[in-house]
Image (cartoon, rainbow, N blue to C red; front, side):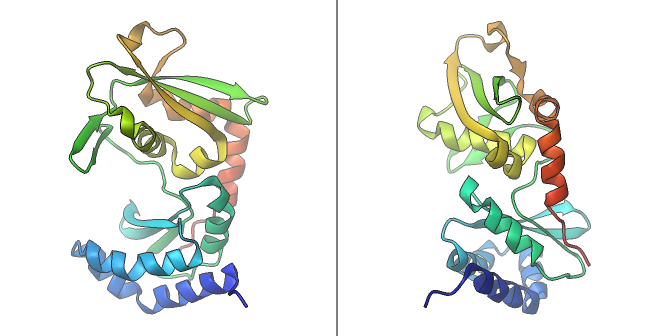
Length: 216
């Protein structure tokens, strides 16, 4: 008989609670290999597409993020975080939070992409229930079309958070143009979060209330 998701989540948190100091120590010394070997298989046992990260999002406490990666996993990560233990010095969140960045510079393997000069267009549906985002990227910027989904999602996640993207954004597409400042109805990428807060304001507030942050 298959083990339920609830039981697997409880099993994961029991392990995490027993090894919280080991996890913090590995994170502090930058031992990503230990963290990956210990955490990834246990989360994949719950659902194979779950990812994780640890960050200083609630400094000086540490934040453990369970990333759903796909929309269908959002209820699962929300449930998992709702059942997380209360541990001093730890916060738990059900998706990658938005980042506070000086520059939208990303490195993946040997590629470096800077999105600071990107612009976008929004198309809203069902009175703001969800939106599509078209990224407008200048030709010659070195943007790799073969990795367009990876980089556009990284940029959007960094600006609005993974939970909002999965819950409220439909398609993210990229269009290569000669000069994106000449594109009609286009907006500099740095305004995306504020723009969406206006378009999706009621739903965002509901999502923020539903996403509980656990702290001792």
